[in-house]
Image (cartoon, rainbow, N blue to C red; front, top):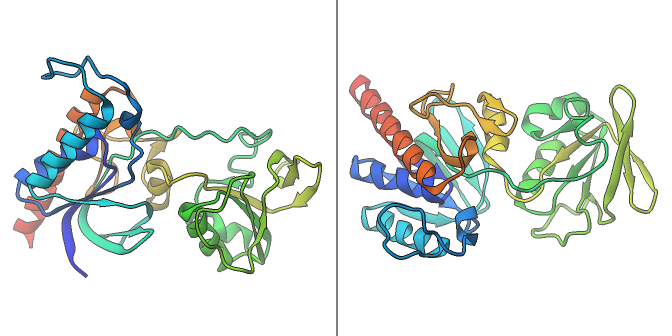
Length: 291
């Protein structure tokens, strides 16, 4: 398996800015992301430096991709569903597995919210956002997963190794991938969670109650905070904690842009992507010297 110097997760302005700098710094660079950056939805941008006439967010992203490619970055349109670390990083996508010396999270902020009564109250008391982290607490018990795509499938597969039964709740959304045939699939939306000190189950929109030991939230694609939790990276809410050089508490892992919180502007994301890239370049070069 080939190993990159850096893999950048997220192909928005922070990720593409980071790729431009890591490529110019001589690092082999792969950018992995789906075509769903929040910037893609911006109709016209008038407050970004250097453009006399306003342009759409889609146009700006396209220019960034072309620039990064010209400098040598490999751009992959795929979903990252897991990141593991044992001295090097292993990145699992919906299609393949890759390795790198460093990783930069630039996945933006999670804008998908699940509005279910009791969800917030039972977080940490049966509601989880990380199967790798919390599956053990539900050994030989019945658990549920909310989701319908590759991220949800990854969480289901983690739980099948531990739990006695796994139920997938799609909340009336169509499946986006194939799930194991022995996983029960319920399309009826969840209306509420119930329990005492801990989660005891879910109530559906048709008033049916299903007993569960745990409920794992995996809607949409894995956000940076979802991936970071599995690595033991410090987070605050859904924001990855970084220092002034965009370094996390895990050596070789950096984060930039909306996933770190703060002011969600293109110019800020580009600047933070640059800082993260310079830190990654410094990390790779110092470790080469040690080696």
